Amino acid sequence: MLSLRYTSPMMVGRLDMTALTRKFNLVVVCGARGPRPRYPRVWKSQKRIGTISKSQKLVDCVKGLSNVKEEVYGALDSFIAWELEFPLVVVKKALKTLETEKEWKRIIQVIKWMLNKGQGKTMGSYYTLLNALAEDGRLEEAEELWMKIFSEYLESLPRVFFMKMISLYYSRGMHEKMFEVFADMEELGVRPDGSIVRILGDVFLKLGMLDKYEKLNKKYPPPTWEYRYIKGKRIRIRVNTTKKIRE
Image 1: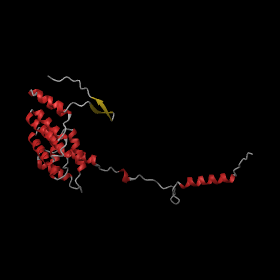
Image 2: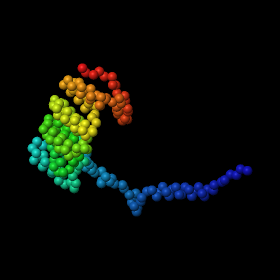
Image 3: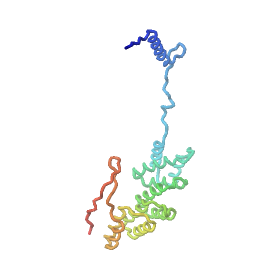
């Protein structure tokens, strides 16, 4: 049998009253003056100085200086005078900005100042300094830095340092020193990149060293696959190896 349930009007009235009480409880009433006004939170509207703005201030400060060492170092010391710790992140971001703007002299000044403070002694800082010296045309200082890094970090030196020195000597036409760096790579067991192999192959062909050119290609054949980034994805692509060799 079917049975129909009937809700009494008393229950409906109770539900309406509870809904009304909940609705009125959401409003905060201060005595007889009505709802409490909500003022904007001033402490959240203030702009905080982050590492990006600090690095931009450091870049602007360095750009407005002369090339005098004492003036540059004094301005950098005054910039970090009130810091509890050395602002390494700020300096790194400032160096990245200067590198994109190709301010090689300013990069050299900032990194040397940072190294004199005993901070930032990393491979990234050394490579940035080496690249800036090479781009600024300071070959002697670049060679001194290279010998210092090579003697201290003999077994853990990254391949990019060898690539940078080989490309530097190749652009200057210093083939003997380029061969010395490549020999050091082979002794340490560092496998050369494809660009290094191509540079050495071009030099061997220019100098008429065909036997060394053939040995180089046999020892380091061109790769059949390479990886490229397309729309943020790493994709494996076959390399076209049917290229004509320069005669």
